[in-house]
Every structure is written in structure tokens, then in C-alpha cells.
Length: 252
Ligand code: ADP
Ligand code: MG
Ligand code: MG
Image 1: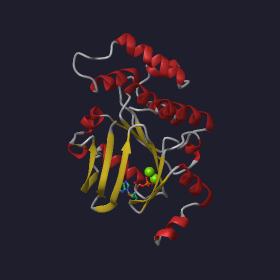
Image 2: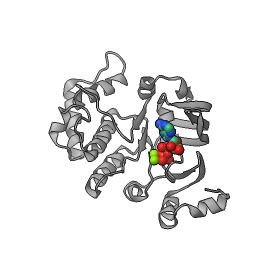
Image 3: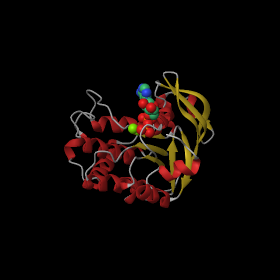
């Protein structure tokens, strides 16, 4: 089992404090959802964990199996087993999707233990078929001209190929039609298991109809203010966030 522990994390952007002490522990074999109103710092949490330079951690810790993630370079975080699906994935000029995937897989392996081309192609074909992706997608340049839905599907392909210990998926459901949402959910559900833990950030409960989270957390004003099981997401869907604000005496 692996564990990702976030302790009392404070993060500033341009000198303004956005995260004000986030605490969260995620084990492999668990799917966690973070929900919360817009602008409460959900994406900031994802960016800070992955080491985006604009997000300054002023105090607190992030540890993966006891190793200090905050001291690692971005590529070292990926090598350690973290995967972040960006809310707005960027294009990488001149690199095909297949090339990118193969080097990402090999970056997590020891030298001399690289995945063979045959095995790589077999896994790629299998996973692309599972995600109902057109085979052209493998030879296209990464994210160049991908539609919103194709990018999201491709991120799940990356997840299934790279097999990280922990994935942080920020609004993987945004802008997806129902068919794409089902395929994306199918991929995440296929990843569920002993070697994999997931933090899904979402504004809407819709995604959680397809992927039942083990734990649901509500983030408000830069903190996790409430945690529960899947039923918490259902209550949020039915009643919104006002009852939590009242319960905690939070002013807008
Ligand atoms: P959420 O994902 O919960 O909607 P964000 O983490 O995106 O919230 O944003 C939290 C706060 O941080 C907001 O007030 C937002 O304006 C601010 N913020 C986020 N990213 C940046 C950035 N790159 N530059 C300046 N302010 C930012
Ligand atoms: Mg937002
Ligand atoms: Mg966000």
C-alpha cells in the first residue's frame, strides 16, 4: 500500500494566501472526491501537489510514502508515481501521443528495464479499444487539435498506460457529453485497485454517479471543511453548499 499525506498545506499565489491549511490522506485502493464552490482552491491544491512554479507552498507538507514530494522536481514527482490531469492540458509540439506515452512509461522504469516495443503496442491497442478511441490518435501530435473530449479520453489513456500510484484529476468531467463521460469513468473504474489511489476534483456530482467515491471532501475558502462518504456528494447535489456554511458558521 502507498499513502499520499497532505498536512496543513498553505499555498500562496502572487503573495495571496489561497490554501489555508489543507489536510488530506489518500491511500492506494481508495478513490477520493473533492467538491466545493468555484474559487475555493481545488485546482490550486492540484497544482501545488504537482509543483507548478506559480503556486508557492509557504508551510505544510506533502509526502508520498514518507518521501517529501515538495522537494522533488516536477518530473521526479511523476517518476515517484504521481499523475496530474490538468484542467487545461497543453499541446506539445512535434511529439506524437505514442512517443509521449512510451517515454512516460520508461521514465518510471529502471534503465535496462524499458518496456519492449511489442508489449507497448499491445497495451496501447488494448487500452485504446477499451476507451473507444480512434487508432489515429496514437500517431497524432500530443493534444494538437484534440477536441475537449478527445483530450480527456487521452488523459485516461495516459493513466491506464502509465499506471501511476496516485492520480489527481481536476475536472476531468468538464465539457464531456454523456457518452464521453461514461468512457472516461469506465477507464478510471478499471484502474481501481490495490496499486492505485485517486483524487478527483469536481464541481458537479454527475461524475460521481459513474465512479462511486470511497471518500468525499468539501473544500471551502482554502480548507477541507467536511469529509464523508458517497452520501455526502448526494446531499450536496440535492441541497447545495449552504447547509455546510450554516453548520460551520462560514460567511460568504
Ligand atoms: P477552484 O478550482 O476551486 O475553482 P482555484 O484554485 O482555481 O479554485 O482558485 C482559487 C483562488 O485562487 C481564486 O481566487 C483564483 O482567482 C485564484 N487563482 C487561482 N489560480 C491563479 C493564478 N494562476 N493566478 C492568480 N490567481 C489565481
Ligand atoms: Mg474553478
Ligand atoms: Mg478548479
